[in-house]
Image (cartoon, rainbow, N blue to C red; front, top):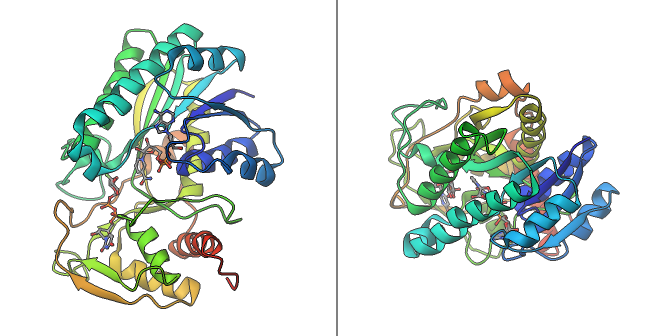
Length: 338
Ligand code: NAD
Ligand code: UFG
């Protein structure tokens, strides 16, 4: 089975993908600078999977160290998660995002070239669609970058495709994630937002633990069925499984492609609050607040390409997403009756 290196492998999506890869018999090496990951993650992964987890503590811009790791571990493909991901921060410090995301990716490519590693799966984002004309969104919808973070994702997608076209890489899959939520059902790994969460699910779980008094629902006057924003939430374990299948596909089928990862179903903020209450038995107090600047009313994926190419379909439900997010957050908050 192939040897895979995960940049940002100790982070939220990377750690869950490691579980999915190990379950399918792959060997994984995590490369992370731990800027946004807990140091216990590799140990928890080892405990969870019973597998040996190789860890390289390094920055993706350290070409020598990354190239050595790729060569020493005989790496067949890289899954590239390592990036900064906060939209607001990217607008406040564009050069930091160009440096970490774009320059970082170029340095990774240099290391891959040195080591002769020619296959890549790349974490992109549905944010590249900006304000879509309509949902469900297909991969050939126009891209409308609305912030620096989105710009870096689009540039990174294009760089990978260029290197395939010019023969430096064999295969690249850009995966455009919709809204990843949830955690492994063991509650041993999950998402750890620092400070006040921006995203809906971490905020809801912190209201449920009592860390925050209520949720602000940003707008109930959108042109959506109940007036609140609609998104395509996808369980992180479904997303993880898709990475393993995308990787297996690209190793067999050289070329560059871009694939949406979502469930294909739009869920409103109120739907999510109700699902969370149903799945966990906790009450989520909320107040309707003004719209959040920059928010899109509604977007969700057409995930049919992923189904056709990878034979993948999201299986976990919104209730699963709520239950697993809650287990993870409750455990962190020391709440045991879940
Ligand atoms: P995360 O912050 O949990 O994981 C990123 C990991 O990369 C962290 O462990 C961090 O320590 C590491 N890292 C950051 N910069 C690094 C560097 N220069 N060198 C080495 N390691 C570095 O984020 P995540 O939610 O797991 O996101 C993973 C990828 O998916 C990112 O590229 C992100 O842009 C993309 N993405 C995330 C979401 C989401 O909602 N979580 C949505 C769409 C796309
Ligand atoms: N929302 C609230 N209250 C909150 C937080 C969010 O009502 O406290 C609403 C938002 O207005 C939106 C929905 O919940 O309608 C989802 O918001 P998120 O912040 O969870 O997700 P977004 O779709 O706005 O943004 C996410 C990531 C971005 C990424 C984008 C596209 O945060 O980084 O998806 O992939 F760019």
